[in-house]
Image (cartoon, rainbow, N blue to C red; front, side):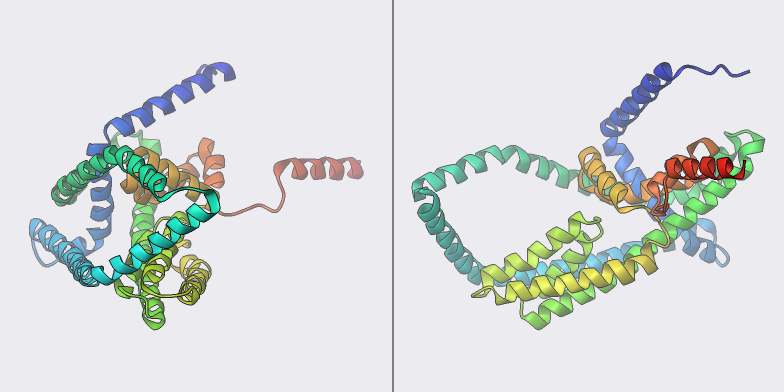
Length: 363
């Protein structure tokens, strides 16, 4: 017979376990981040690898799948690099307009707040000195990204090679009466991750095309680069959309006169965001991973504080996997409902009062 511990003992133990788990996730982030990305990529490439295995040996199928994925990534990076090079071609004219904008801001600050030009330069210098540590962290982050780029293909290859071994372990580590439930969780998790990533890729491609077309029509410089970057930032729920709008507005500010272009950019992006949130996301993405907006924002911020930018992108697939597990375990189903976007029309207190009233009337 299992011993039932009182509430005041269970809560501190659960909180201690959460603190230790989060601390371990933070300490081991350099190992866990590439592993998490590799797991997502391996899950995404699994159907392609399975089809290739019918015609070629397993190792050859894995290598071909990896080469196809790497080829697509190289194509995307080549496109972005050419657009960045084009941006630097126009850098001189942008600098002139930017210096003019800075001069106008300085004049406005001096007129409105009495800050002299020398005082403003001093404040900027102090801010630059305080940001040296951040720049150092960014450079170390770039080195970390380079190491991840080389590690992830190795991890993906080994995960796909030892897929059967890993799955057998997950089945055998649980008792026989739970193996059916484990199989259901693994199947749903694989389908959710695959459809979620594919949905995101389709949505991102459509948003990138819409952003770029709108900016080209409005005559914003480097429209293709800014449109694609905006679509990538849009992968971050609610937060990335704000930054994505700021980029073309800033570019229009430093390259055009007046504020007409900026207002038209905001209007165009608002329409694109409306189409994305009300047509693309519900039909392509949300049908695959049903996480409510509050949890999405909180989990993205938590992912950013824990693992930085990679954590922001990994947070939604991670919470989707948790929801699938919660929905399958009886004691954790309330947590699964909390993460989902199905909002009940009445809360439990109202339902209980209604049932008591109905029982009393019947008597």
